[in-house]
Length: 327
Image (cartoon, rainbow, N blue to C red):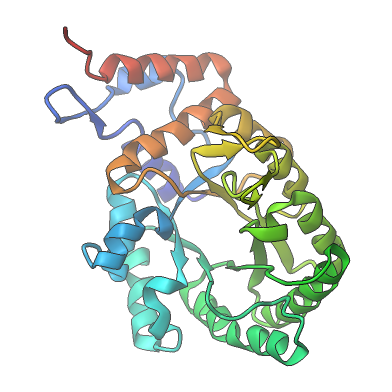
């Protein structure tokens, strides 16, 4: 981690928690030190912000794609994950991509990845369509390279039986991974509906692809396979972490019986850390109004993993700063 990132984390830590009057309160440095919260050189994982969190604002034009880095920075988040849908016609626009990168660089914000949708099915049963889907993603590999991202996130959508879909998805992913490797860009697959939300199936796909440039992006909330079938989120993330090159965090999870509940942040992030992963975990929940709370929830989990006692101290600080209900 760079010195700039460490210092910035210190500046933003515990920032912007709402008070009863609707203002902003900051924990004093003495409080933070007392709780043992000042960032160390090595953290269990890093926090990033995915554009999908701000989907309403980006689609409406309230927030421009070029301002995304500033929004993240102003909320104490120094790494960002783009979604191609918000600059779909700019993949080959070099001046535009240069401006995106410059704005992030000027703020000390790291560009992590581009989430890619609507470019065809990489597991399409029709070989020509499958190859076309691979080619459609080529421009996003180039865009990721221009932005200094490490990966593009893709989908493993296919059709047919379990085994047929494994074979087809693995074929498309391997073709794209070989292309990405030529440019130093990883290809990572999200559990994103259908069989891809079955961690056993996606793990089998990864084993079949067997390419160092291909990995997973476990999404904590995307384990709904169909209307009547789900996969336990905690088990699913654990199953996919051996190939993880990124992690997406939603605040709702599934169990194997189709029930949805609140994410246990510390439990989930412990699974991530136990897998040996210490990279970026992207916030994908809370919306614009909830960015500070989302960041704080991950900071609390991170500190509880580092030091349970320190984590409890942070919780007490946060709870003490929140407005009390009056009768």
